[in-house]
Image (cartoon, rainbow, N blue to C red; front, top):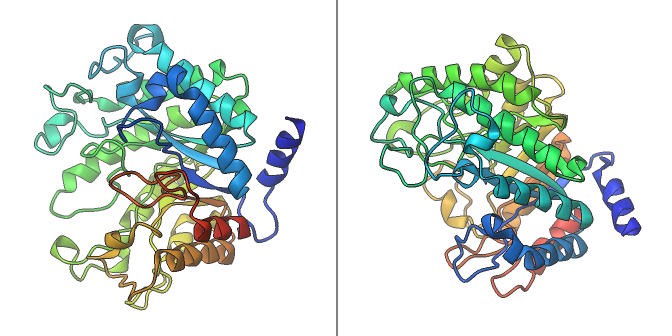
Amino acid sequence: MLTALLAAAASCAAAPGGARWRGVHFNPQVHADPNFPWLLHYATCRPAVRAALREFRAETGANLVDLFVMIPNSLRTPARGNRAGEPLEAWANLGFLDNVALFVDDCHEAGLSAELDLVDNRWIPYSVDPAGHIGKPDSPWWPTADERPWDEAAAWYAQVIAAVEARARHPEAIAFWCMMGNYHWGAAEPVLWSDEGRPEILQWTERFVKRVWPAFRAAGKRPKAAPILLPIFAEGGYWEKRTPAERLSGFANLKRWLVDDLKRPPDLWVMSSYPYCDPAPDGFSYLREIVRILGKGSARRLITTDLMAVGHEDELTGTILRPAGRTGRDALAWHLAKVREYGMAGWWIWAYQDTPASASGVRRLDGAWKREIVELIKAK
């Protein structure tokens, strides 16, 4: 045990030119149903999950797992969201919060840290986009956002953070919390970019961020990451012939809101990442511009995530990036080289394990490791 903890501590110190955090989005396939909510049933799944954590650490030498903590799982009554002013006990599934804390402790025992992405879908009122909102009044799962969704969301984020940190024996194993959620998809990057066809979406999102971020940032003791950012490389439709500034508008918007307006910068920035964008086929260096937008020294606080590589080849079609026959391994090598070039704080890959519908894991569905990926991870 002591050896594992000392190794974990050593791995968390950023080496010159190396990333502090290196890991995967954690999706162990512990049930016949690939969408089984194993964290809701942790008592049953815990032995298999603990084994997966130990094996991941031993096989790859990585030090981080990313996990979505979604609001539906946290609710005592599905789709009945918390109300402003309510105590935790009035709305929360306390057993689920205990499970999250236990998972954090299991990560600690395995020599890993956990990035916990808190997913609330109530970023804009339901009335602003009834057709697109996932939290419809008849939803059996997602809560419906009222006209002041930031009141309930700020309380939910802050109460969950405080509850999990208080319940965990080793809250220091929480690498950081990230403020996440998408009103349309649920567990996805928030809509932070500008859309001249629907300007009201961004207007409401700005209100939400400016009212929720201070409460999120102040909750608990562990570091806080800004909402996950998304560069947009789609081609055709609305994005046909859009400028690099428009494709990166989410970065400029969020930096302005958190840093320039609120004067409350995050401990870390997090972004979903695509290969071959620095420079891109259009000749523009998108990563360089992202670092410039976020400000001096931002690369050292930037986590590049959801790396589009092995198993994601189809997701690059319909984009301006045009991989031109390069393999998923080539894409992963590109990502990790850019982390070193810019001196970024870390990265994680989507995902830990393949599913019946996706081959993007570091590990196959039968448990076999993909050696070509493991060797790249080990090389850092």
